[in-house]
Amino acid sequence: MIKLMELEWRKLERKKVIGELIIYWAILTFLPTFFLKVVFADLPTADFNQSYSNAMALMLPIQMGFVMFGASLINHVFIEEYKNKTIALSFGYPISRKRLVTAKAMFIVSAVFICTVISFALAGIATYALDRALGVIAGEPSLADIAVYAFRAIIHSLVVALSSLIPLFCFGLWRRAVVPTVIFAVAIIQLPTLLGLIQISVNPDAMYATLCLLGLVSACLSVLTANTLGDL
Amino acid sequence: MSDIVRTYELTKTAKGKTIVSNVNLRVKKGEIYGLLGPNGAGKTTIMKMIAGLVLPTSGEIELFGKKLAETAKEGLKRVGSIIEYPIFFEHLTAMQNLELHCEYLGFYDKKAIRDALGLVDLNGVEQQKVKEFSLGMKQRLGIARAAITKPELIVLDEPTNGLDPIGIKDMRELIQTLNKEYGITFLLSSHILGEIEQVADRIGVVRHGRLADEVSMPDVRQMRTDYIEIVASNVQKSVYLLEHHLRLSNLKIVQDNKIRIYDASLSTGEISKLLITQGIEIEEIRKHTSTLEDYFYHRIQGGDRLD
Image 1 (cartoon, rainbow over the protein chains, first blue to last red):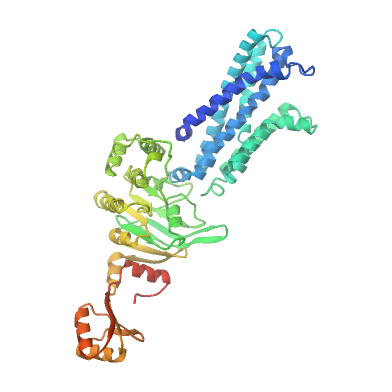
Image 2 (cartoon, chains in turn blue, purple; image 1 turned 45 degrees about the vertical axis):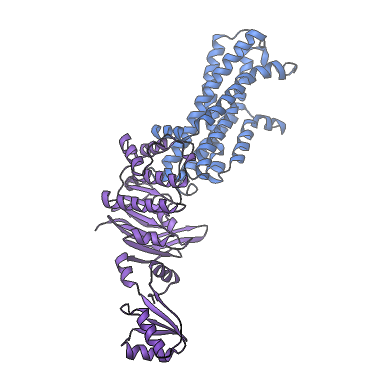
């Protein structure tokens, strides 16, 4: 399976994907400081800049942006392969389609997870460094804050990785449509805001757990229907 | 000769439409088998199913004596294919494409890759991206990829499509070389019937998704019927003269003013000389040699025999 995942990476237009990744990292690294310093600076109801533990509550949803990277990978790994018919090459190998789809989904999850973990690290370091220079957050981070941040970064990266699979079944394998995949990814990222707009209050952990579950269901359906919906 | 490919009642339906229906096909070891049929007859779908690209709706495929299924695709290790047109990861180089192919098959031999590129005369361009290749180069690279592991069966769908006359000749020679020197069995399709005629040992005629006929080339050649066709003013008198003066019995009137003589031993000169000296006006006389095209056309039209 690891070999198949590696081959997925080798098939990609790597320069394009790495370019995209650098843009995501660049934006998401500095976005927390931007929000703290500019957007929430004059909002009396927002208390993210009161302490590092408060700031963490802002860091987590911002990294949901990597769901978009997952959508981009669904496009490269599934939709483009169907559109330019290179998927036919894979079907001609002595590997079952279910295994091929599993490898592709695993590749997306792994890539999104690793990149989100790195993004959390970059955002944490950048926010701390900018706080030193600009004085954005009150107080100093404690060791406990750093440990909680590291732990939540890993858990949340897993949430992002699994959530990024939600559009896979409907828009990646079945409809094979790029634009709906991206729009759906944006909707997932904006879910807390959208729920807020219609005044539905949901426990964030319950929402993230649901997103993970939906991602897993989507991946399972993709694998199970690989022989029917995945046919050329 | 053992069978490399056998299909049993192979059927494919899509969107409620039957594309391939109950095809029972046999490709023997070491032969070049040509699939003939008009556009939309189902040739490509049959090939796709044999190459594992499309799953049959019903029926079975046996490769090298073992059933091909989603859970049993080992037979595909011994098959190379180019279906419809050569597909590559265009942003990768020729070498990277071939390396990827080998890795998927669990085959690691750099020398084999270089040999395959040499076989199709693509040495020197291996580091070039495939998107920079012409169609002819892609076809040859496709053959290199299909042949790299020295498979026992190569499936080629319309291998001469888009090639110039030199490219077509090269492709034909390549197929024959791989068949004769390496013993590779070929299953190929083409609309250029002359091409099939020049390389195939046996042909299968596909019509409306069905295998209408399977016949060997020597049999097709035997079935060929050469005849002389005469368009003359007085058909009855012409027939009398031909039967009594030239002792011909193998002839028939096909239209009011048209006679066909099925006797290859006579020349048009001898016949026209006789008829003109007897006062018959000849509007047209020509020798007709039936080709594979005639046979193919006849089978596609659903007739029973050549006439």
